[in-house]
Length: 91
Image (cartoon, rainbow, N blue to C red; front, side, top):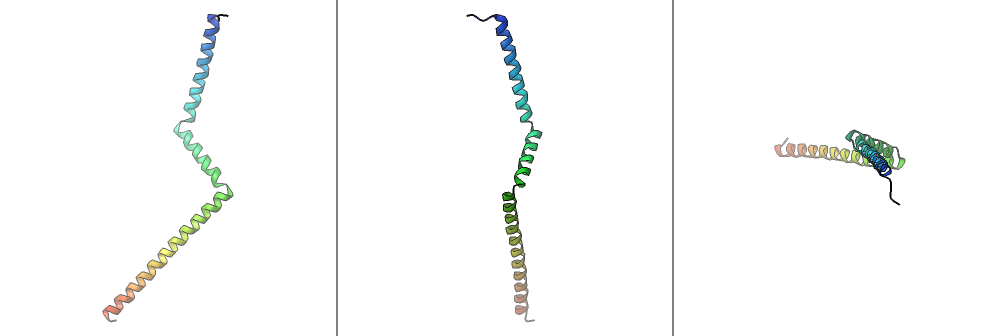
């Protein structure tokens, strides 16, 4: 059975409307501000997870320990150099 031209035109208009709505939704989702907001929300949600908090705390502890070790080693090296200079200068 052949379709009526009016039915075809209504279907085309409905399809155009749906396509325009879909394109508007895609444009809204891909706006840089929305992408940034989504990323911030995702990061915030992940940081609220106790497992992630434990991992971040562990990494922070290792970094702090590494910095403390480096400072300690640097101070010891400075003291050793001072002692060596005193010995070489005969003081």
